[in-house]
Image (cartoon, rainbow, N blue to C red):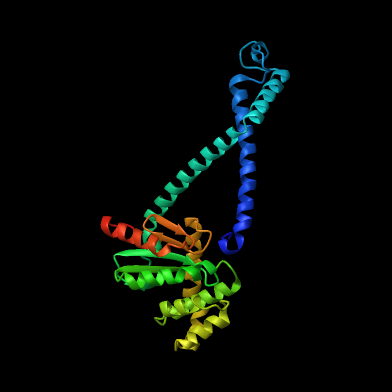
Length: 285
């Protein structure tokens, strides 16, 4: 899996984005050249040079080279056209991606928002559900925790679902396993707040320490950590994130809207989406 967190990969992603743009420009140039050649043939600036030979379809090597020179000269003198092509491609790709995402969310709404055994805080029967994908070692998730707590404490009708996305380290996965084991003893939300709110590195040792502080049955915790139920839920959350295109933590979903990261106004954005769906109704959340 290639899921990565913005905590450590922002610069790498930006660099990769620039490389992809350069490649896109190159492909756009080739596509433009092929399209022009198919319509006009390859010729020089003079009309008689670019005119096709007998039959109107066959062009000589000299004509092909000449038109290639024309295209190259035009693009060198008007490089902004490459940005126009790239922007149009990005816009088209984004619209297609958004459409696919909405269709997927509508078809898989139960798995995303109402799957049995979900890790839930707030009202289990709440009228609007918020979903968060997170990692216990994610700095942005830790920063966003007070905003999440504020929403849950201030809105007694909201239902909040947590999806484990341990992508930062082995310790993240160990902590996630302890969290899901704690859920089996009815202490998920308490455990989640304690571990995510801690400054300590999240791993098996620190997670077990939190579980013990909450008075949980430690023998059962250790047994449940290795259970198929915990293993399958982790795998299910990871697969769901991949299908949704969630590639960083935290990532919030409400209806067919999403909030990547932990912006300074996270609570206000979440509250606004919840209030909006509460007024209009949400047939998937």
